[in-house]
Every structure is written in C-alpha cells, then in structure tokens.
Image 1 (cartoon, one colour):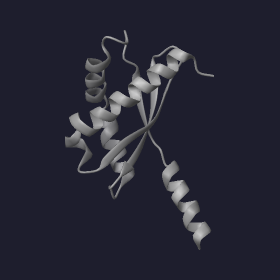
Image 2 (cartoon, helix red, strand yellow):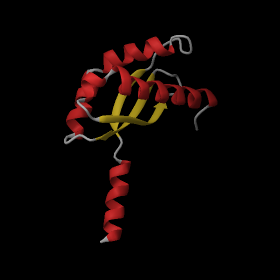
Image 3 (cartoon, one colour):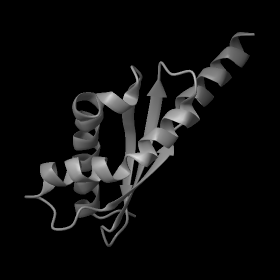
Length: 112
C-alpha cells in the first residue's frame, strides 16, 4: 500500500514528466506522442517506475529505447522542475504501457 507522500510524488512526477515529453523533449519523440500513464515510486523515493503509452509511431520498442538513452537528460529537466519539492530526484526506469493495445485487441475480438 502506498503512503500519502508516495501518492503525491507519483502525481507530481507524472504531471511534470508529461510536460517534459510534450514540450522539452520534442526532438527525441520524432513526431510521436508520449503519454505518461502511471508512475510508481519506491517507499524510499530513490526509484521511479514510469509507464509510457506511445502513439503514432511504427516501432514502439525503438522509441522506448531512444527515451531510455535520454534518461539522464530527462532526469535533469525533471530535477529543475521539482527542486523545491524533492531533495533527491529519483532514478527513472521507463516501461512500455501496453494496456491500451490489450484493450483494443479484446474489443476487436469481441466485435469479430
């Protein structure tokens, strides 16, 4: 069970990372849309698992690999945004959120 502090930090990181991907990191998205669907931070606030939903891209794994290569830059931009709320910026791990693809697949199977 997450604490209230973890929940607030999850929401803060999700909002700020979403803005970073939409505004500051347009050069790595290659015209694709990246949405931060979920953030889970560990109880000691040292690690954050970030789940991304990728749209308008032919190869989602390749785009996820590019995002992972720019983790340092993303963490730096995040640190500038949350420097007054957090003492230490958590380490960022990015994962592909394929729940929307799964829902779409089930919907298509039900329609057939």
